Amino acid sequence: MHLDVQDLRNFYYRSTLGRAAQKAVRDQVTALWDPARARGETVVGFGFAVPLLRPYLNHARRVMGLMPAPQGVMPWPAGMPNVSSLVEEYLWPVDTGVADKLVLMHGLETASDSALLLEECYRVLGPGGRALFVVPNRTGLWSRSDKTPFGFGRPYTSSQLESQLRYHGLIPERHMTALYQPPSARRFWLKTGPMWERLGTRTPILMAGGVLMVEASKQIPAPRRPGLAQRVRKPLKVLEGLGQPVPEPTGRSA
View 1 (cartoon, one colour):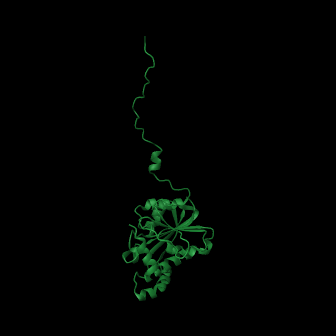
View 2: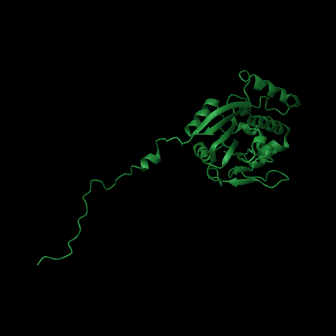
View 3: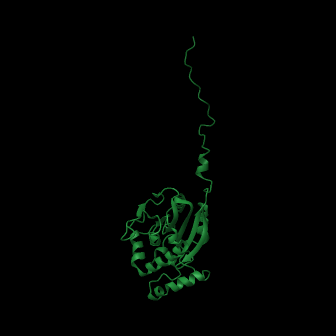
């Protein structure tokens, strides 16, 4: 079940906790993918990934914020030409293989059919492209609280997410966590948030971040799995065993 775009906007842009969460996750994204190296690239975000895309607006050749129809859409970025659009959840208006960078946040864990969504991710990702999946961490505190968007949908462990990505031809390359501060709007936790993030990234075994982030590359060629594609190549012969029709004689005997 997707959250409403108004609720997501209010959290990330109008609440102190949401702005802190946005910065913590975005800092990890930019540390992984330097915006200055995105020149000439197409950067695509799906779900509600636009808070993570702003650093790429002035560097990438093209930035697209795709928001699924069940969630709704809002114009973004504020004060600049709009780059967000409302799309069908599993049918994006993006050419095959054009995305150099693909970011999903609040997309995979709330999808009604994660398999179809991952197939669409595979389709739009170009050769050598990278995808980054940001999902609630099952072992973190944020997935246990419904006060933030990360408390909705299906939380993941790293092994669960990575196995699902591999099945759909997306090879996990790196994983990390973020949001080590508690999901609380209390002033103490907000002021000490940067300290918790620094401490958490240095000692990830001792502290479980609220968000799991997995970077994946595209496997080429796509994996072949048993299913409808193979079965169609051997169609059922429903008339097999029946006698062949005999043509009626054209003339009459004398």
